[in-house]
Length: 211
Image (cartoon, rainbow, N blue to C red; front, side):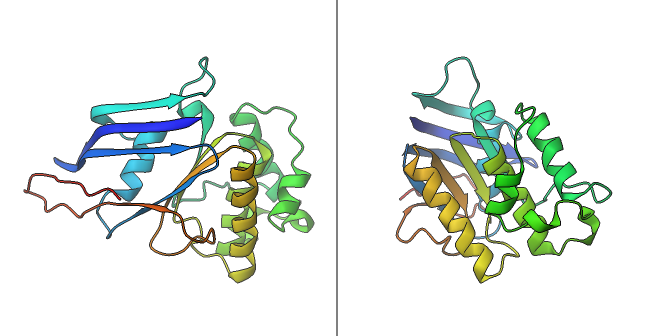
């Protein structure tokens, strides 16, 4: 499997956030998307998942399921954890498993993988910020999808939870998945390829640097 972007451009808020952006990520690979705040890291992930419009360029997935779109084969972990406080930990995860098309998915292994198996019946309103993040990460395990789009995935996680996440990413990559992670720092995978986005002044033409 290979996710390929050629000459991508995204326009938001009356300006180009990025343009002329090209990269490729294959099965078993991770790509760290870096750059200053406002450089377009989150917008890039949102463009891939279909939450922001790509105004120029092409995005293709080679070797994926031809019957499914790219968003249907991807998980997106954004800044917001998208949990209902009144639902329990288990109910939140069951909702997302059902919403993502995995009706009847076994949630216990996913909760165990993120260290929340003993909090299944606790209302999400009582979770700490780190626990909320771990519950969101559990979606990646409960429903299998080959593309992980992670926006600051280690945000609010303590050292132990960051180590758990790194282990989950390593397993995902070893099973043929791929990872794009927008980040300001290490994500626990050692040396990874980097795509660096340059901050664009509001009224300036856009030139992107990729490495």
